[in-house]
Length: 415
Image 1 (cartoon, helix red, strand yellow):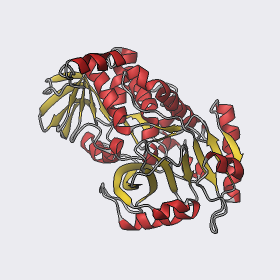
Image 2 (tube, rainbow, N blue to C red):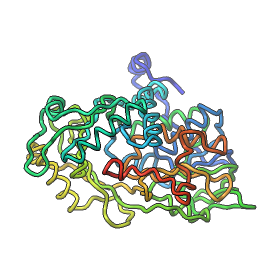
Image 3 (cartoon, helix red, strand yellow):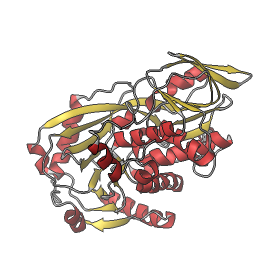
C-alpha cells in the first residue's frame, strides 16, 4: 500500500494522477479463513484491523451483504463523546475517543476527527443535578468533563437562545475533547488498512446460513458460496437478531429506525456539538456547512432506512425554540438507520451459546462514537476466546444475572 502524504500528492500531480492504487482490494472469497466477520461497517472493520494490528491474525474475511459502510456507519450524526455515568460505559467510550485522536495517523487516512467539544444541555432542574453528578463521576473515571453555566454555553455557542419559553437553557455538561469525525472516512480508512494486511473484504455477499458441528461454528453459507472458518464474528447492528437466529440462539435486542436529517449548507455559525436530551434533539455543523440534526427512534420495531414526516416535525419543532435560526433553513435530506436496542441500552460484546461464535451488537443510538473501542474489545475477545477488561461487563450473561449497565436511566437518553 502506498502511503498518502503531501509528497505522494505532488508526485501523482506530476504524472496526471495515474499512479493511485485502489484503496482496498475486492477479491473473491477463499474456501477457508481463520476468522470470518459478518458486517463491513465501522465496528466489523475495526475488529478486523485490531485483530491484525494487536494479535497478528490476518487470515480474515470481512463479508458484507451490501456495500462497505452502507449501513449505520453511513447513516449517523458522527458525534464522538465519552461522558457516560456508568464506569463500564465510560471506560469503553473513552478508549474509543482516545483512539479517534490518533486514528488518522494510525490508518494513514484522514478521518477528519474534529475535537470541537460537546455540550449536553441542562434544560430542567433534574438535568442540572444529573449532569453535575456525571461530571463528578467522570472526574473519578479520568474523563475530562465539567458542568458549565448558561452564560458559558452562550459563549461557546452564540446562536443558542437561552430563554426558550418551554425549555430554557440552564447550563450544560461540557466535554472539550468530544467532537465529530467523517463517518465514511472511518470505514474507508479501516478497510484500506485491513486490505493492506492481506485481509479480504467481500461485498455483495449476503450470509444465508451458519453451519455448526458438535456445538461449534464451522462456516457460513453465502451468496458467493460456502466459506469455512474457525471463528465467526457477528457485527451487523440492527440485523443482529436475524443472524443470531441463523446461529441458533436468541438475543435480548429489538430493532428500530433512528431518524436524522441535514439542512441546506450555510456559512459557519456553530463550532461545537449540542445535545438537548429533554427534547431529544442534537445539532452540529458539518464541514460542508450543513446543520446536522438528530432526533429520536421510532416507537415501533422496524427495519426501514427511510425518514418519516412526524420526526421532522417533532425534532425541528423542539430545536427551533433553542436555535431560532433553524426556522429559516430548508431541509436537504433525511434518513433512518436500523439500530439494535437492548433492555439496559448498553452494548453486547460476548461469546454466544454457539462455540467460537462471538457477537458485537446493541449499541443502540451511540454506535459511531465507539467504533475503535468496540473493535479493540471485540478483537481481544475473538483472539483470546474470553473477554478482557473492556468487554467483560458487556457479556450476554449479565441479562440473566441482573448485572445491567443502565445508561438510559443514568443519562435520561438511550445513548
